[in-house]
Every structure is written in structure tokens, then in C-alpha cells.
Image (tube, rainbow, N blue to C red; front, side):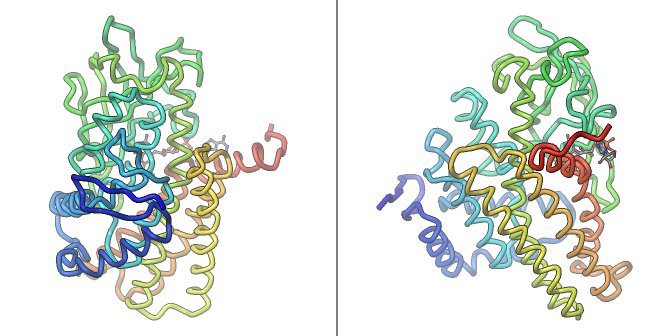
Amino acid sequence: MTVVASHESELEVELTVDAVRAAFRAWLTDNAATMDEFRSITGELDEVFAKLCTLQRLLFNAGWLRLGWPARVSGLGGTILLRGVIVEELAAAGYPPPFSFTAMEVLAPAVVDHATPELSAEMIPRLLRGDDFWCQGFSEPGAGSDLGAISTRAVDDGDNWRVTGQKLWTSWASYSNRCLLIVRTGAQDSAHRGLTALFVDMDTPGLTVRPYVSMTGDAEFAELFFDDAIVPKSRTLGVVDGGWNVAMSILGYERGAAAWQRQAWMMARLNDLLRAGKPSARSVGETYEMIHALRLSSRRTMRVLGGGAPAGPAASIDKLMLSTAEQSLFDLALATVPDVLFADDAETQNWRRDILYSRAASIYGGAAEVQRNIIAQRLLNLPRAR
Ligand SMILES: Cc1cc2nc3c(=O)[nH]c(=O)nc-3n(C[C@H](O)[C@H](O)[C@H](O)COP(=O)(O)OP(=O)(O)OC[C@H]3O[C@@H](n4cnc5c(N)ncnc54)[C@H](O)[C@@H]3O)c2cc1C
């Protein structure tokens, strides 16, 4: 029996899916009074994030958010499957995911895979504890689906990189203090071979963050302008000109592990919907099937990742199923929740935000058409379209 124990956390649990599930369920029951304030979090974004951050710290200090990470980054050991259990149980018990959950499943595993041991030991604990928030600086005005077209440039300047260019659609950049940035270090025509990944502090001189509001009404996005911003070379992730591998590993986690989080949350939202209105039984059944199919497909991907292998092109199936299920769920909410377009109470506003955000599910992390191309070409070996 593998048992973890730590002097910092009281947590002692066998590192298996079943044991962690049972222990976390028991902890949630025992701590229901403390956790109650996190059940429904509303208000201005600043307040919401502050509260989610408190939740994250609580879970970290109790040891739960350290499961599934190696000891060298303050983890308690075990695989990604243990993280999947925590997120699923949290959602099933009616709690929101802590703020950094997406960065934790999308960016952090790639940092563990590619950063120097010193850099990951410094950065990952700060993220898990909720001290840091990270954003993802990939997309540019001329490079979205085609990441090989990135033109933000990093020029060699001794011990530093000197970065110039523009990013956009950077989610939650105004709330983040670090950015995982993909830049061009090779020649302009080096395509995917000339990219490098950097870990950049958001208060770097020469970096300007210009937020903008999405259709949900939140200032979720920002444009990032780099004007001779100096980034130490010690913040390079992986090898110079090897940024494509880092980006692909991040997209693999985004399409794979993040889909697992999303299905857990969607299942909880489907249950909420049954309380909020009277959806037709047939539509509920169809949506449930889609979410459950996503769960099974994502479970397979989680097991691949848990075995230490990359998610591979099969994660595109998860991403496609995610967007289909999410849009079906919130189309159903649109048809079901009373006065969903105009009512101003917090619960209806939440439904409205989720309905609008679901439109983005077939865009972020690689648009649905791009996922279909990957499935067609790399899994089904179909010829490329001319
Ligand atoms: C909610 C949300 C959050 C986001 N967060 C971030 C973030 O944090 N960081 C970040 O870097 N980016 C982020 N993005 C940007 C996102 O990654 C891009 O929008 C996405 O990759 C598509 O790129 P694009 O918008 O440039 O569209 P384009 O690449 O211009 O695509 C336009 C259309 O053409 C289609 N298309 C493109 N190429 C092909 C092809 N080869 N075959 C068939 N069809 C094709 C696309 O499917 C799409 O329908 C976010 C986007 C959204 C909606």
C-alpha cells in the first residue's frame, strides 16, 4: 500500500483513485460548514476571483491540490488521475473549480515536462497554492489556428531575450502575473521549427496589457503588446527553437485533461438545469448521453496521460465532443431557464454567461474544423483537402 504523509499537510491517503475519492468525499462532508461559502460565488470579477483563490488555498493546504504532482514541485505523488478525481468530486458536491484549475491542467503539466527543475520547483507550487495566475500567450492577429505563423519575435541579447510583437485573445491576462508565451526565435520563414516558449512576468517593462470585454460582459480577454520587453534566458521553457513541442504538449493537455474538468462541471450544470426549469426529458437524455460519452472518451485520454504518454491526436476527439456537448447543454438552458435573456438575479446571470460562453467551446483550444482535420488526417489517414 502506498501511503503519502507530509509534515506540511495532515493528508494521509493511499494513492489510488478509489482511496482518494473516498477520502475526499469524507473530507467534503466533514468540512461542509467551512466549504458552504464557496457553493455559490457571485459579484464583481475581483471578488469572485478572490474567493476562488481562498478556496484554492484551502484545498492546497489540506493537501488535495498537491495530489497527482511530483514531490519536486511540492506534490504528494500519484498520477493525473488523482487530480481528475478531485475535480470531479468537487463538481459533484456542487462547488466551482478554483480559479487556477485551467492553468493547472493546461499549462502546468507542460511546465513540469519542459522547464528546468529549478524553474518548475519555483513556479508550480505558487500556481497550485493560488499565489500566481498564469495566462497563455499563443494567438496573434495573424496566427490562430496556424500557430506556425507566429510573428512575435525574441531576439538574442546576451543573457536575455528582447521580445517585440502582439498577442490577442489572451484569457484572464489582466488577472495574471505570468504568461506562457510562444515567440519566434528562428528566421521569419522558419514556420513551426523556429518557435520558442518563454515564461514571462506580466509586470515586465515593455509589456502593455490592454483588456477587452467579451460578449459575456466580462473583461476576460486582453491584447498583449511587447515593445523590447526583456525576458531572462533562464525563463526559456525547453530548448531554443523547440517551442512547437511545448505548444503541442499544452494543446494536448488543453484538449485532453481540461476536457475531463469540463465534463465534470457540465454534469453538475445539467443537474442544476433540472432544478432551474422543466427541460424536455428527451433533450435531457440526449445531452446526458453527450456528456457521458465525453466522460468515457476523456477517461481514456486521462489514462494515457496517467501512464506518462502524450495525449496525441485522439485528444481532438475529446475536444470536438466537449464543444458539441457544451453547446447542446446550454442550448437546452436557453430553451429552459425562465426569462433567461433578461432576468437580473445572480442565478439567471450565471446561466446567461454560460450560454454565451458555450459559443466559444468550438473555437478555443483549436477550432472544431481544425479538430476534424486532425482526426481525418492523423487518426483516419484520410488525404488532405486540396
Ligand atoms: C473564449 C476564448 C478563449 C481564448 N483564450 C486564448 C488564450 O488564453 N490564449 C490564446 O493564445 N488564444 C486564446 N484564444 C484564441 C483561440 O485559440 C483562437 O481563436 C483559435 O485558435 C482560432 O484562431 P483564430 O481566432 O485566429 O481563427 P482562424 O484561425 O482565423 O480561423 C477562422 C476560421 O477558419 C477555420 N480554419 C482555420 N484554419 C483552417 C483549416 N486549416 N481547415 C479548416 N478550417 C480552418 C477555423 O476553424 C475558423 O472557423 C481564445 C479564444 C476564445 C474564443
